[in-house]
Length: 284
Length: 172
Image 1 (tube, rainbow over the protein chains, first blue to last red):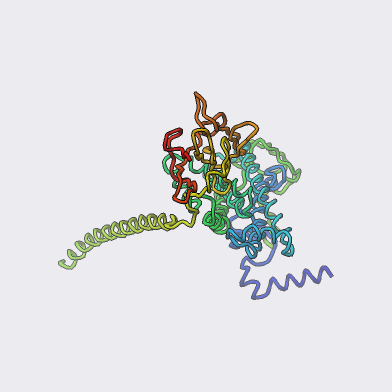
Image 2 (tube, rainbow over the protein chains, first blue to last red):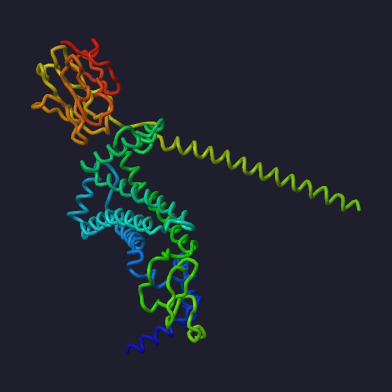
C-alpha cells in the first residue's frame, strides 16, 4: 500500500502540470534539495544549506522561528476576529463581549490571539537576549540586529495598539497613560499626542486610528521587515555558529572547519559534512 | 568630416541635456515628496473635533455644602466649596493623565495610577492643588469658574487661572 502511494506521488511529480509549477525536478540529491529551496518564492529567502548542528534545539532554542510562529498565529486569528469587531465607541466593547460569549469559537480565537501576543513579546525579547549573549549580532550581522530592533519596536507597537481595541476601563486608562508618555517628547510631544489620538483625548478617533495601525499598517511593516530579516540571514552567511560551541551530533564530528567555526576540533573518521554531497547521490 | 563634428557636439549636448533632465526630475520628485509629506500631515490632523465642550455646567451652587470637595467624574473636575468661596480644580493628574480621587478620610486628592497626592486646603506653605508627593511634575491647575445668568456654576476646563486669586473664586 505504502509503495503504491509513493508510486502515485512519483507519477504526480512527473506530470507536466507539476513540472510546470516545480521546475527543480525530482530526486533527493543535494543539488535537487538545494534547487527546491532556491526556486521556491517563499523558501528562497532561506539558506539552501544549513549546518546540521545549527538546527539542533540547543543552538538557537528555535526562538526566532517560534516568534515567527506566534506572528503567523496572530495573523490567522486576528483576521477572523475582524469579521465581528466594529472599531466604534458604541460597539467595540459589546463586540468584544459577543466574541467571548456569543460567537462560535470566538472565545478560542480571542484567547489564542491574546496569549500569542503575550508569547510573541516574550519570545522577541528571549530571541534578542540569546542573539546578544551569543555575540551573533557581530560582523557581518550588525544590520540584521538593527532590523531586529525595528521588529522589536513594531512588536511592542502592535501589542500597544491592540490593547485599546476591547475598549474597556483597562484599555482606556492604559492608552491615556501611554499616549501621555508620548507627549513627554521635547517640543513636538503634544503634536505627536494629538496626531496619535486624532484629538485631545482617547475617543472615537483614537479607537479608529489604533485599529487601522493594529490591523493594517503595523502588520504590513512587520511583514516587510521579517522578509528582509530572513533574507539577511542567508546573505550574512547563514545562521550564526559560534566557534566555542561543540558539535553536538556525533554524526557531525567530521564536519570540515570553515572560516566561522575554525576553532572546532576536527576529528578524523566517517561523517558526511554539509557541502560535500555524496557523489553517488549527486549523480542520481 | 562635418558630420563627425556634429556628432561629437551633439554627444556633448546629450550629456548636458541628460544631466539637466536628471536634475529636473530629481528636483520635481523632491518637491512632490515634500508636498506629499505636508499634505499627509495635514490630512492626519483633524480640522473638526467631535469632543465635549470644555465649558461644563456644574449646576446650582447650593448643591455643594460648605467645606465640601465634589468630584465630577465625567468632566474631570473638582468643585470645592471653601470658606473663601467656590473654586474648581482639574481632576486630571498632571503626571500621565489619570483621573484622581478625593480621599475624605485623609483630606487630600490622590491619583490611583502612580501615587501622586495633592493638597485641597490652603495653608501657609501650600495652596490647594499643590503636590504633596509622587511623580506629578506640576500642581493640579485651577479652572476658571463663574455664575451664569440662571445662577448655575460654569467651569471652563480649557482655561487655567492663578491659584487663590480673587477672580478664581465664586462667592454667592
